[in-house]
Image 1 (tube, rainbow, N blue to C red):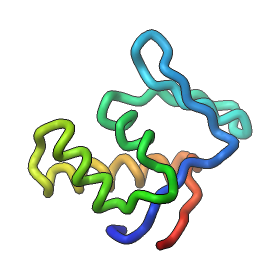
Image 2: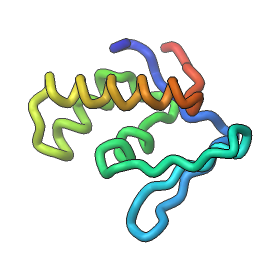
Image 3: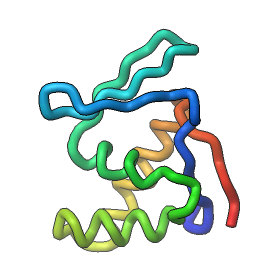
Image 4: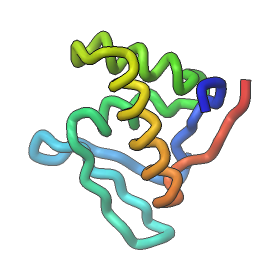
Length: 91
């Protein structure tokens, strides 16, 4: 998963509501509330950043070790994929 460049679905919208990121999937009629770390990861799902790059950014922003950051990013991306919120772009 390190070389994949996760990408948000273009038809899914996200907004900050009362200080928290909310992702609206109109197709599935679902609203997802993201915590701070998941919001940070979501913002970087632009189809250009690799999983490894996102993990490095998480480590830098939150002061976590690289292994913990990679695990957090992988778990968040897995969950986003399970919810059908991602497309995938390859580099």
